[in-house]
Image 1 (tube, rainbow, N blue to C red):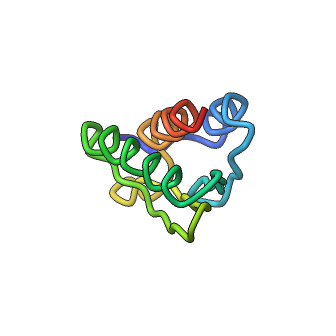
Image 2 (cartoon, rainbow, N blue to C red; image 1 turned 45 degrees about the horizontal axis):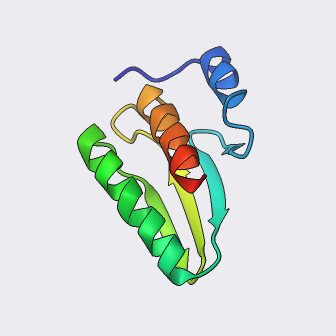
Length: 93
């Protein structure tokens, strides 16, 4: 998968307003009502990520999940990152 250009990333970010752009990654913190809801969401995302063969870097502390997405093989952001971010947003409601 090809690394996105700065212009392509900017265009994608318009559809991902809750995500923060870093130099070679995007990140977002998701907050849920409790641990069970957070873990359920993570399980749902894991199924999507596995189908995509694209896995997030994430950290869960009780009802909070911090996510960072980047395509390491490409050395930055790709379409996979943007698609997974969009799917995470949908699953979070």
